[in-house]
Length: 213
Image (tube, rainbow, N blue to C red; front, side, top):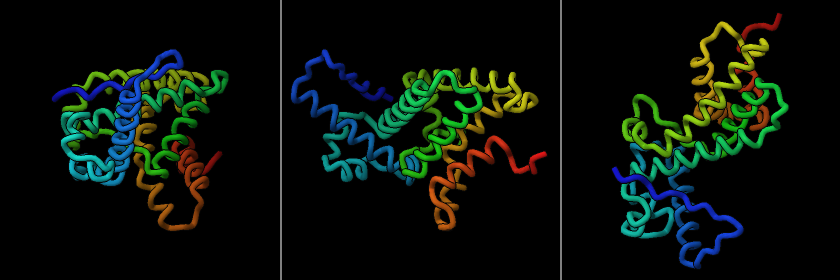
């Protein structure tokens, strides 16, 4: 599989041609569509024809940007991890570790409810194998996971997160909140506003269902 084209970083000092700017805008528009389709349908049901049609370009033009459906998904998921890392880096460094973890969960649920959180590859996904060999994605995933791991250790050390739970369990629980169907069921029920859904899910993630002592 060919790797997807790297996103072009635009600095204030860099002068891009009109054609280069058009290319950047089109690639981001393509990834926006892929992001929505991965969220709504998943990788297996998404097609190149569908992506091209929603972007408003020919399939031949789409292939000039991305060599395959796997490359499209890889680019979208890599961008997701970049956005996650940027969100984490923007947090107040003086916040307690548990509040940083809660902020990540809160943000991921909000993104999910907005339809902007594509599902991460699982052990049952047909794209899982190709993503596990895609270096840009793995690099971003490692960076995010390492930072979350540091926050988990700090929260366990100060007692705000259970020190008896393996860190890996906590890490994957945090990742799982990004694709939790409970948020969708609660929205469909209509009894709660999105803001309430987010806070309830953050509370159950960190406080559980047990009655407080």
